[in-house]
Amino acid sequence: MGEHRIADGAYSVIVIDMFHYDDESEMIIRGFPTAELAREYARRRTRDAVEESRQAGRSHDEIRKLWHTFGEDCIVVGDSYTGFSELDFFIDHPATPEERDWMAIEKLVTEKD
View 1 (tube, helix red, strand yellow):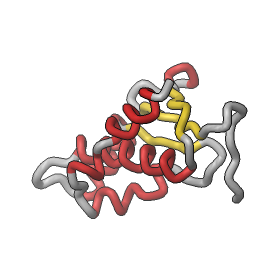
View 2 (view 1 turned 60 degrees about the vertical axis):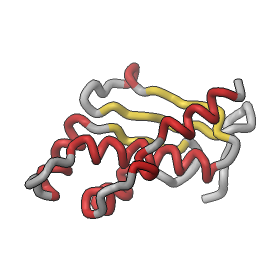
View 3 (view 1 turned 90 degrees about the horizontal axis):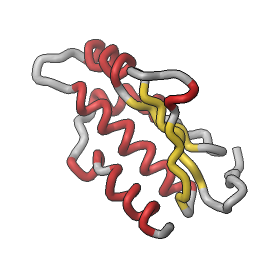
View 4 (view 1 turned 180 degrees about the vertical axis):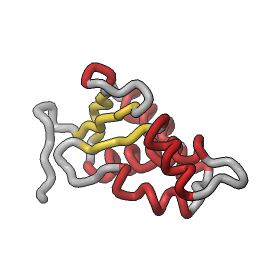
């Protein structure tokens, strides 16, 4: 799949809050200058939601169920990336603080506006 940009020349990420999910609750973060940056944002934000479900003693299946109930999934518009595609990897490999820091990327994108 080739890269597609939205009309303003930037990439966007759809954030789906599974706890409050309906079409009106989707959030769109716009303005990523590259598909790579949009993917990294989506990856970190999804991974952070997985880590919020992680507690000592919780099994892979328990974390997965909690993420499906309360987590966030991110989809890069015009790209094949979805956070869900890496869910099992995220569950099996706890994230470092940097791998969870989606806010640093969002701040870069929103500061340029």
